[in-house]
Image (tube, rainbow, N blue to C red; front, side, top):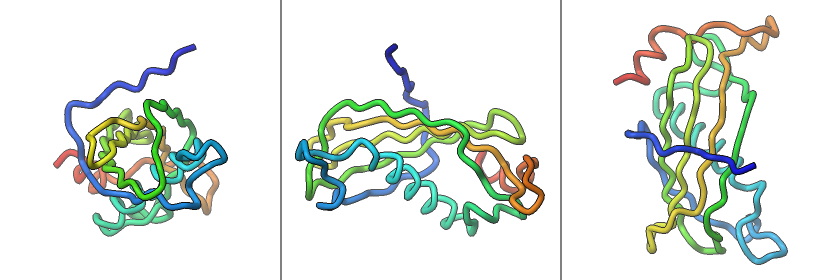
Length: 140
C-alpha cells in the first residue's frame, strides 16, 4: 500500500528544525521515528504562538488518534529542515494536520506527515469540542 499525503493549498505556520546528531540512525540518516517528534515540536510551537499548550486549548487538550509518514529523501546531521503546517478542521472535535519537511538549502522535500488530533478532556477522559475561539483562530 502506498501512503498518499496531499499537499494543502495554504499553511498556517512555518518553522525550522536543525537535524541533531541524536536524530541520526544507523543508516547515517534521519531516523524514521524522529519525524513524528519533529511534527510534535512544530505543533507545540504553533500552539505556543497562539498562547495555548497541548493540554490547555481553552480548557481542553488534544490527543493524536492517527499518524502517517511519507519519506521522500534522506535527512542528514547538520541540515536544517523548513517545516510547514496546515490544519484542516474536520469537525468541532477533529483536526487534520499536514506537515511538509523541506531541506532548507536544496529545497528538496524530505517528508510529509499527517496527524489526526481530537479535542480531549483529560480530566473526564472523553472527547469535547474545541472552543469556537480556537477554531476561529485557525481560520484567520
